Picture 1 (cartoon, rainbow, N blue to C red):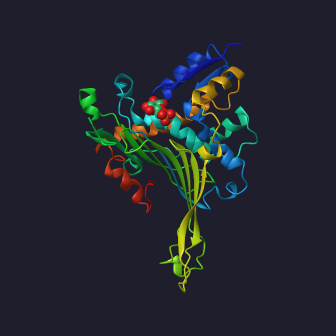
Picture 2 (picture 1 turned 135 degrees about the vertical axis):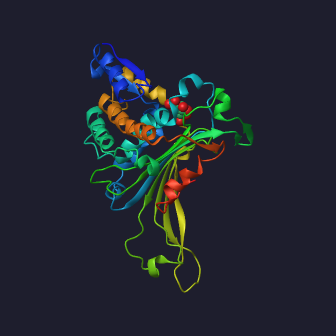
Picture 3 (picture 1 turned 90 degrees about the vertical axis):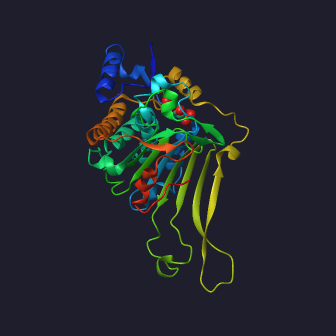
Length: 350
Ligand code: BG6
């Protein structure tokens, strides 16, 4: 039996990805084709399934009733790293969002699959991906930010800008921030803010689930002045691996009024599983490939749903003539990325 593994780039848009998939599909059946997204090989990404579907207390709240918004950040401190010839003309949207970030988003957003098998899991993921609201030349202006790094400092090191590394000016983005909507029953009105970039202040990838405020505050009017805050769940994917739930607690003291403070329920996965050998993502994926298990590989319809949404953004950028805004290396993107979320009364978790 022949199995074939392929890794990105699978095309540069929907049309070219179909060409690639048609070409491979002419020779191999979908069951033989293993499309690698190495983020699916990461323990922390697989752990999202365990968190959501192995516990009773998250799933009932995992929807628009209890969740205000979701943030997904994948920050990298590195720059081009000599990958100029691949990266220029591709950019952060195609390099990171089309694949890794949308895979994370689909696992966060999907309906519970009936079982952990390749069809059940991928059926639910693709439904979530197909529910992404396409962008337009109008909405990209308020729902997307493109950035490109200029000289600056990362971790105390002076670094050059993208155009200097490239040797010429370029319209390729090295940072992107997006406000996405998933138009289905579960997520109506819940923005998913995504951001990823090179030359950020820290290599840090995490998911943040911001819950809504309690539906009625018994602590003064709207909890004003008492410290009452909505709950937050932070899932750190890398470099550390932890899950933190910020919950309200009474601040000890004799004040007449109950005062509240945020305390952290902290699960360090590194500590909980200390002594377990760390496996790299590809190790897991290659074993699954040998075993013929496609659960952690990307099905053709997922790739196409991902590209469909990404194409709407790229087309919007072209039509609106949106070029990347400059950001100094060592920052979380251009200031417009901060405005993107703060307009909605929220802020990036750092
Ligand atoms: C790759 C991208 O797919 O993922 C790179 O092409 C990026 O640009 C890398 O640096 C990030 O992977 P990781 O596992 O280091 O987060």
